[in-house]
Length: 163
Image (tube, rainbow, N blue to C red; front, side):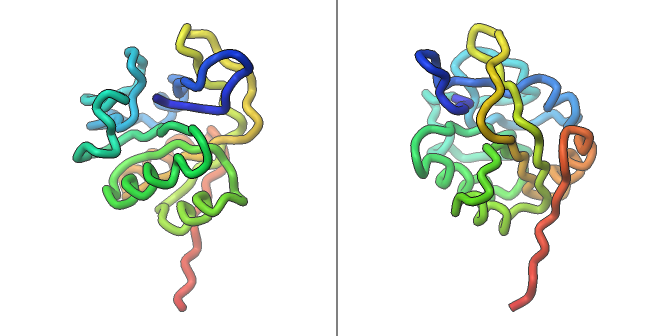
């Protein structure tokens, strides 16, 4: 369920590399968009495509690497993520996209990372994608985890200007 850009003739399913979880130093209560096969996501519970994480009730500290499918596919996941307000989300770094700018306004902290080589379902490492990756913090625990993982990229905090 964790998607990245389609590789030619391959799959849309790509998994987050273990080094990202190692750097975050967290155990999650729930992975809301877990692949059908077992991976190394450090979570106590998993929602797969069969469960439909968008329709389920989320609880606790969540990890979210949502499907990166077609246009507009990230917005419902990010909306639910920030309504929940407790966890870390992974998305592509697409600063010009309206969903990205909306997410920037809602996050507590962001970690911009270089192009992550995600893992294929067969366990091999994929090629370098076309854009970077961003981790989003919702809540102080998530922000602390991103601070621990600062060596992976550049930390940024949105500046909110009063109207």
